Length: 180
Image (cartoon, rainbow, N blue to C red; front, top):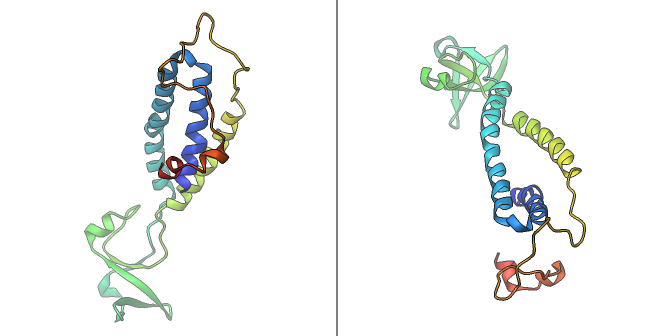
């Protein structure tokens, strides 16, 4: 649902504005918007990977499996550390190599690491919000009746392009709206 709102606000409104500015090249205007929208992944994917690495933190390393007294209760493993019982996981060398930073095989405290996802989402959300607000203030709808110089609209006979509008109150009453 959140993605739908994002697409509706961040994609549909610029495309409809572009079509108003380029009625003679509607397909090109829409194609350029789609290209920019999809091309954002060229910047976004490496940025996300970098932010995830930046915010990621390996869980606290407690030592090797043989150096700690481990207890298993109800399928969960615990270790006694400084007089306190904490939940732990035992990672093999292969599993530890997947952790951020220089990780080694051994025992790790549960709930002490960070994947970096929350920090990445927050950072991207703030950056995207700022960029979209600035971009939104740049939108200008052409004046009523504006058209490109030298362009004359084609006659509407048999054309699939309509100049009619359906008010949202009427659209909500149609079966097609809800099927979409």
